[in-house]
Amino acid sequence: MTVPAGLATTLSIQWRTNGRVILLWLVSVAGTFALTAWSIASLYNTPEKIATYADSIAGGALYAINGKVEGINTLGGVIQDEFAFMGAFLLPLLEFR
Image (cartoon, rainbow, N blue to C red):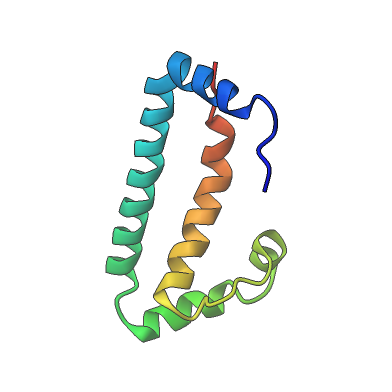
C-alpha cells in the first residue's frame, strides 16, 4: 500500500493547526457512543424488549430510511442502529477550520 504524496505533511499541518478541535471531536464522539450504549443497554435489558424493538423497525418508513439492519435482534444491533441514526445528524456538524 502506498501513501499518497504529501499526506503526512498535510496531516501534520492539520494536527498543529486544529489539534484541540480534533481531540475535542474524538472525545465527543467516543463519549456519545458510550452514553448511547449505556442508555440502550439499560432501556432494552431483556430479550423481549429487544425483540419488540426489532419488530418495530422491521418494515415501513424506518426500513426505507435505515435499510435492513443486520443483527437487530441483539443488543449490539440495537446500539449500532441507534448510534448510526444519531451519527447521521452529528457527523455533518464536524467542521475543521
